[in-house]
Image (cartoon, rainbow, N blue to C red; front, side, top):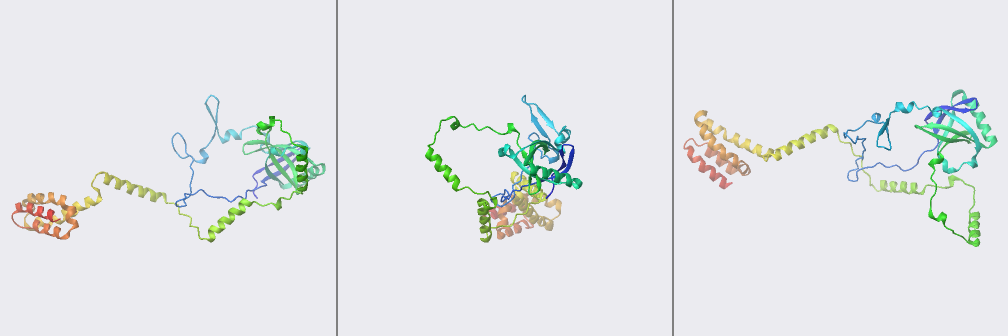
Length: 338
């Protein structure tokens, strides 16, 4: 166990150094919240409601809203300066009978261990409480909250029960309490006889958590039946950025109406036609013919790329050494064949 608090028990003029340990633990079957589709863990972020930025835990303070709507912000430094003597001291206020404490006031339970050379005064207080049958009422500050506490002996160890303040316990306000409900004496006798027949010494080890056992059996059955899957790997944030950029680039190309496929088709058409003018004449004289051929080629590029024979015929017409005016009908023929 790991201690969660370190201080001293103040017993008159005696100070007993102690360490505080949580005495109980939960045995519930714990689950993660996951996406039902792919098993990904569901995560929660601390986000500021004003600027939408994620907040680090160290940047979080406590805010108290006043009745007039104003806000008071308290930092850890403000809370550390509160003048509480119970911050590092468990002061014994009085000793009472345990029967005087209503169990509804009990909150959490802790073990107290003597710290260093405080073993002898620790044992002295323990034995005195045990011999007198009394419980010590104390005050302690834990987790920025001061509580009443009852200190008693259990299995040779001092046990501390934090308690609710009286104004924290709700009063039952139910309608039947104001009604005049009567029971017959015979019914009351039968109920008392049933209680007597079921009387026993309380042994908590005789009882089991049926829900936890049923849940454990269900999980084992799922595992035996092969209804398991590996824990999905968390996506790399860097890869997400790259994928986002690719998606944005494709979206821009699609919005322009051309797209990567059409741009590529135009480039292919231009590359196919480029050598023809170079073989038959100097570049300056072939320029008009080159422009005339390139215009229809752009429009028909997609169709020509689908049918290789038509594309071949278009190249032959483009490469003709004479009569550039006849190239226009040749292109129309190519489109009809396509």
